[in-house]
Picture 1 (cartoon, helix red, strand yellow):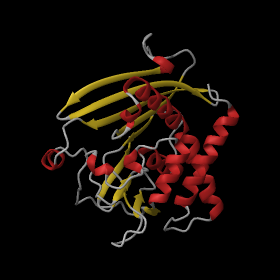
Picture 2 (cartoon, helix red, strand yellow; picture 1 turned 90 degrees about the vertical axis):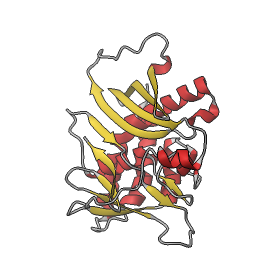
Picture 3 (cartoon, rainbow, N blue to C red; picture 1 turned 120 degrees about the horizontal axis):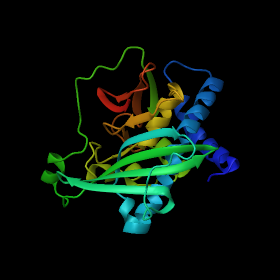
Length: 268
């Protein structure tokens, strides 16, 4: 169980990162409004972040320290559970984590279900992750991209635009504890089967989710469902070609996020 003080500290660390991103809004929200929204997004995403800590621990304990590298986040579902309504995880599930695995079309798909208590509320969080299982090779990677560049999607009217730099991604890695190399080392995301270029990293799915939840709240009576249908590709700082940040568009009605003409996060 997480103590209120430790949860408050975690929220403050996450909110500090979000505050910097939300301050770049194209609509020019006042600083106090950005800070309030940053804390709201950090609070909303905290159960997912804490659950991810437990999943990382399970993966490293069972499969080794390097097993976390190359895992790609595909989906996150969060719901508040009534007291005593725990999921049947089984006696072989340590620390309230249940793992299901399946291999399909050159990918290992992992579903991790976590039961945890955050600030007095009982949560069920389901993280869906994937890892490319084919040996490295240009043809294999190109034919089996988990995400690929897409065109033809029109950004919803009224969207608010934000800048996201690799320093923001690195700060989120530090605040959240998820230091998967795909978020920190340019080129590693491309090796993992994402659409990012050799000079780019990808933003954490939970960072995108926190930005979305900061702007569009979920109903406390409904499940929060974040689907990462594309990677948010962020250029390396100091790159001589183009801008040194990614531009994200957030739909103020749905909370969906797009980059360019590619959707990267859907709220369901």
